[in-house]
Amino acid sequence: MSRMTFQQAVVAAIHREMVRDRNVFVMGEDIGKFGGPLRSNAGLWDAFGAEGRVIDVPISESTFVGAGVGAAMQGKRPVVDLMFLEFLALVMQQFLDAGAMHYYSGGSQSVPLVVRAKFGVGPFHGHAYDHHSWLANMPGVKIVAPSNPADAHGLMVSAIRDNNPVLFLEHMALYHAGKAEVDPEAGEVVPLGKAAVARTGSDVTLVASGLMVKRALAAATTLQESGFSVEVVDLRTISPLDEATILASVRKTGRLVVLSEAIGRGSSVNDVIALAADRAFTALKAPIRKIAAPDIPTPFARELEKEYLPSEDLIVQTVRNLLHPA
Image (cartoon, rainbow, N blue to C red; front, side, top):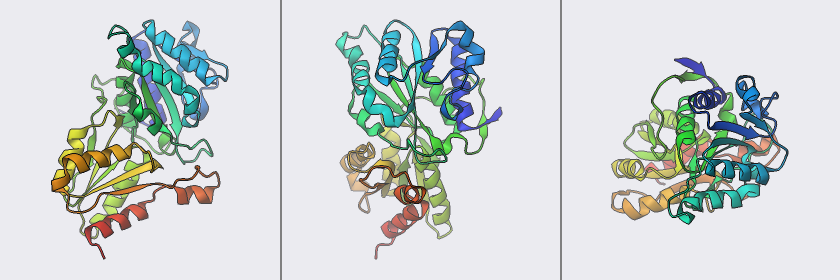
């Protein structure tokens, strides 16, 4: 076991898969000797640059993600660093084609492509937009959002080995925020499409991903001091959803609060709400609540950033009001 940050765990997973499978290579802007923004590819150039498996590219996101789609169709397993999720609009067509290629080809063609994207309000100023929900409407595309280093490592291994295009989200507030135990040599991986119950409880279910899991757990600890028992479900994979884990928790607690750093309207968490309303309605003891970012551009000023994100205090107050309405 090793103690790693989120960033180190992701790089360790990519390194492991590049050693295991020579078809794996990485591509992106400034990922060579520079190591990528926030050290997102640190050490990979030294290990694999001489083999031509760490490829620095010009600033043309649509071009190099499109090249990744083509390489994946030819049997390679590219891991493409998009830098920031803010640039997702530039590669929507590439994701659309990659996700549909298995269908277009009558099942004969796969696209084992991973696109990494950093996002979220954190110590790195700017580029915080969370647009992942755009891809939730694209069949064949998987979306992964780890909340801790161990899951980041295990999910990246699974993403590289998956035969479908995967958007791998890396929250910048989690990137260097402390270390946790990770076993980079373990044979186990974290399967895509499987949520985790990060904390068990009986009064209410909080469903979240990424940074919102950390805030949900902090809120649950605060609420426990007042005698409230909160269950926290970490989605880990946003698409496809682990419907069974979500429904089992909601049926147990009878109450659901969903958390999203993305704007609430059109957010992927709306699928969680629809799932619970459709298939766990009779178990609900109270209305479903959604805590999400407001319908405005992600602010740049530090003071406004703090107001923009769903806070621990807001989560606590929402749960208290749900359990004991005025």
